[in-house]
Amino acid sequence: MLVCFTGCQQPMRTPTRALRAGEYGGPRVDIHQNMQTKRSDRAYLLDRMRVGVLTLADGYPQSAQTIFEEVYDVLRTQGINKDKTIASIAINEDIKVWKGEPFEQALALTYYSMTQAMLGSWDNARAAANSSLFRLRDFGEDEDGERIDTYEITRRAVEYERAIEAGDTPEEALRRANYLDHGYAARESNFTLGYLMAGIANQQLGRADEADDHYLRVIELDDRQERLIQALRDGRYNTVLVVSYGLGPRKEGYGPDNSLARFNPRTPSDDGELRVRVGHVMGREYVPVQDVNVMAGDHMWNNLADVRAAKSTIGTLMIYGGVIAAQYGSSRGGHDDTVYAGLGALLLGAILKAGAHVDTRYCDVMPQRYYVVPLHLSDPNEKITLEIQGQPSSKMVLTGLGPPGGSQGTTQLRYIHLVSENNPQAAAPGWAASGRVFYKNPYTDEPAQATLPYILGGNDARPPTQRMIDSYHRAGLLTDMTLADLRELYRAEGIDTATEYQSGYAGKHVLEGGRSLVSPLPGTTGFVRLFGQRHPAYQPKSREVARIERPESPIDNPLPQGDTP
Image (cartoon, rainbow, N blue to C red):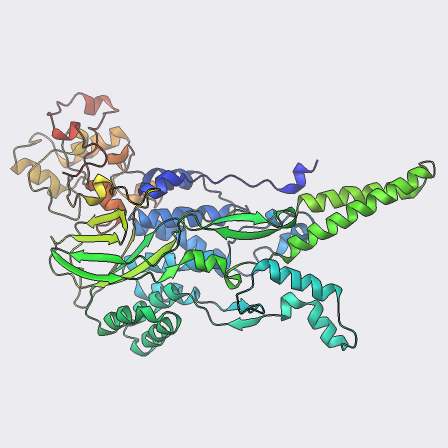
């Protein structure tokens, strides 16, 4: 019976190995296909946070936008748990709709800001970044000047409830009893990444004074960022890279009946600098702007666990009281109502104790740290090399980015998540360090030679267009085929050539065994992984494609993982 009340949590579905290796295609599509559709479901928001972060890391901001719009809408909704508050207090914290810890909410809003910036919508990026800078509850420090944790906050709350000092006025007694409501000071956010995103967005919109206010706040929080802020203030950049690394901390229960929560690091914190090289010119080194381990360990960024702790304590007391009452009634022959009252208290106490455990669900795809890099790009063929000091496995060579298009003064933003192997001294994957483009795509001119579509044995992974057919014909390829004929082959294979055919979401790419031809943006991890290595030859699924003669191709012999061409 107790199983009905304890609200068993669903296990995490995201494979850690894939996250560390930068292989997001499979996990993001799997979670997307299994997302909860009812907003009242406990996993509704958690699923969308996971999908959104992975989709942006994979280089698909348009698809990420459809996900983060739902996240943004939920986080802006007040009272989402209103109808479940009583049940949650009486039964189990898990019954609440999951909204994440405050630091997870701030990061999710920042991802929405980055998504809008990648799409060139700096006004929406500004609004989302501002939303991430909400005020925080600060319960201060202990006698030694150290930040107090949630356990100490809970202990003080119980102490005040049980030991109101003699002579207190009723108002003072009420204030002390309600320590969790009155024992804190409201503080301005210390979320450095949020201030940076807000400053950059304001700068792109011509709001120089507002941008400078945010930049000043960044320096107040971390004076190591002065060089970065100076580069941003100079405004001589046309590209901003937001680079993340590692896995964020894991949420675990501890204390009586696991009634409190804490976050334990999965990737250790350090001040490893990000080294950036554009072309053959060594650029600057950048220190982290945000450490998620530190955020998660600060009580200001955590939900308070007083209700759980109180349930655990009350549950224990009620169990002991129930046993005593039942024994007393039984000693009188078993005909006393005390027996039933004792058994009732015993059952309720057991339920309360069973439900006292903390909700350990967390957004397991969040990184451990972030860097912000402003660049001025002028050569579309220049390669950008990123590597964290002392972490060889993190090396990544961005290809195909180049300067932004559009009107003069346009600035582009890219989000990149670096590989973070368990052994950081291991070499970077071959695709991450290759610096090459093996497949034709909508964004680059590489490779230069004429080739057939990937599904016909070539290395052209572009969606079919008339321009593409014309280029085939000029090279003497597919001379008897029209655009309609080629599209029919893709249809026969069940391959989607645009996101509008995929309900607005880009599926797993054909190069990775999926059925989508939608390409990630250049300058992203997804672009490097897809096009920076050779993939096995395509295996036809339809008779229409299988009967077309396929030329022998070096693509049939993919590079072993880890080899660099």
